[in-house]
Image (cartoon, rainbow, N blue to C red):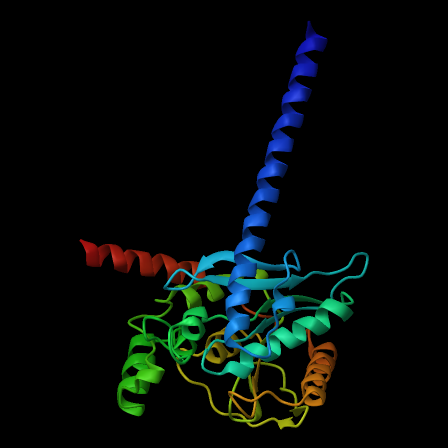
Length: 314
């Protein structure tokens, strides 16, 4: 009788494991389906993104988080390759400002390089388009998201309301709608997801692609790259609510901001590869660094936000 019970338990365990595996495969399949459809929409808008970039099961997945209008935020991960241990964890982000079209297209081109040559030297997390609503809306692409918020001014900062909203937006930009930081820090689903993902993935360095200043900007320790391709280091300053301020200055995570020369014109193929090679070489030689990143504080910040929202409702 005891043997029969043990066999029954073993069979039930196998069935449960099988069901769990089937559910996981189905979930992964739906994420891949969603990612493919979203990617094809991006390819329709951007000439440098091809339908072959969106082939099914190529590793591009929906994160499970969505924009204001319900469009999926996509990511592609290039993990370590055991037994080799990754030298650093690198987060690469494009399309924070969706009207900077080249910042999205070049990330897709760099993903093609990773698809072919990923060696496991780094653990990559690639987010080709953080602001899908800004790109895929009817009409021209916009810098801001569907709520009219500049995602690169929506990250937490010391005394955010006074510095990001009042001093910067109201007084400095005179309420420029292209630079509206939002009603509160992390008010937008896109920036909130990225802040959470930074805490979860724990990158050693973040590379954010923008346009059209034609320089390399840098925030945080150590010293930034002097040049990437033909783009030379030129510190543009740190704005309250920006990703560079939040990750680079507050969390000690080096943030390399690649400012391409043109928003609507891609660099030549040779320059795209040159920027990539220089960037990879800099990360290899400078990361990890002596000053450790700071991965704490977001949870407390989120709890404070929830308490504030609750008090407003009451």
